[in-house]
Length: 393
Image (tube, rainbow, N blue to C red):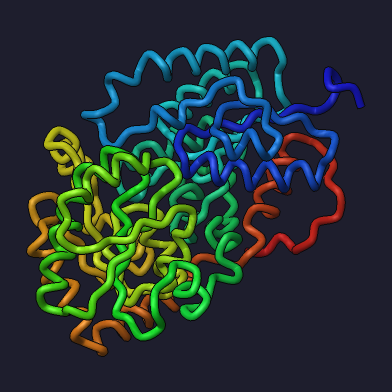
């Protein structure tokens, strides 16, 4: 089929995590409907998966409202380019992946043009700005949610909603074993290992890593056998991490591209709040969750957030199964205190692992990307070849 007549679907993601999920979805779309043409906005992973990118704003992604102002011109240019594409080429459907401040505006433009809108991984309306549920329901043709407790929220406003399961289940079908992981990151089998995951954005790393580094020193003072490995996110510059670690009196090994190996190898993790907390829970590694944002972002969060926890592990469990150290509590002393408390309590570690097993059971089953792709093709009116798995999550 000629490229100009091939059915087209637009995929739109604006952050590194959305780029990852968008790439997985694109791969399934291309397998299930080889004739489909994929365009949109994303990052390098989506480009590698065959999406013709009109814009890449993943490098502009920020933490919190206070940090976003300087990035607005780049976002606006990307938005105008996508709207122009919608008008001139009219894809069969638009798939929005998280990134709500941008994507809800794009949804309105697509709705006005009569183009079906699918929201895959909608914003966390259950945590804040619940009024968006009604807006999303009005603007979308279908909502593909990744948590089961999201379904009744959208059903209540008359939205067509489908629970497809969490995309992490596809990525963690066969996580590395502890033995494999320790061999991969170069840690002896008998060592007591603390993994450090300071975040996937530079702002997060600058705020958290110095405290994690000092916490490592305090932990080593109490546990001379402790070793430390930092999992470097692909979106973080290694020179930044090296400069922040330069004053550390404790050796902290840095490994890139092996986040799951660090998680599986560690006895305990100090981890920035985000998707990584859910990844660690699915792998089964106990953790202490830490987070810091600017004072402006903290104020906005206190005004808007309506749930008592910030980490996905606690949110999905519906109770505080992992400790959270936020803002002024995210200090080296508190990180070390919680780490040593947990490492000294086999019962506390076992309680976290038991809760993680419950969490896994609530997130559905593998085959998430394929289920989402089949739903997208259905809305777009594009026939699919036989899937590998069924539709049930």
